[in-house]
Image (tube, rainbow over all chains, first blue to last red; front, top):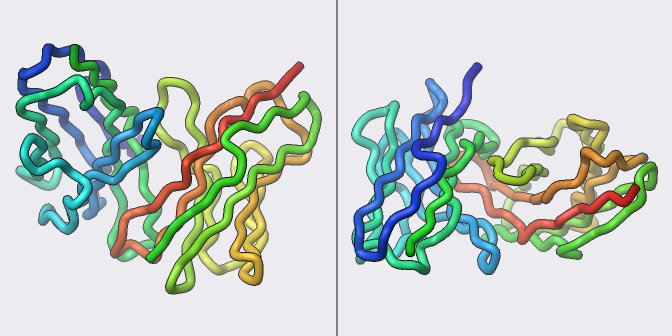
Length: 114
Length: 113
């Protein structure tokens, strides 16, 4: 059963702490996306990678957010230091660069910063 | 540039009634279009997609959508709503795998008994 796996599913942390979210894309997919979902802003694209190289991270606050792909099976999104306004659901999705742009989503990480 | 507009942030229908969720898109190239559904505390699941093969696209759970180039629309319909259809629905556009999907703001569908 091919699916995108995200960990953790839920995270509560105190303001100022580092948060790391992980994503395992579907095997064989060469494009990985990070989206953030909030009530106010809806679904926002934070960053995406193709063949592990960052293509666009213009949606990410550069001073505190960073995204990497250490290898083809792992993508990470870090926030340091975290702030209450970072509270949201973070989704990872994967797809194929040569395809239609269809993205397969993980279950998301619900982050609460107190 | 690509963008999506979903008309109506909330739609309420009675069980058994027609469901119509509206989506208009903007794209500088022939687009690929998608409808995703999100149930509470879940990720987004693909309902259906338009990839230029046919203008009327059938998806899962009895949903379908029609691509109308002249109207730049891709509205989602279902002839008879079921209680289990209550969810949030997102329309999205892509200009191919070289770019990320751009999503609309979503429409929350309520189904009344």
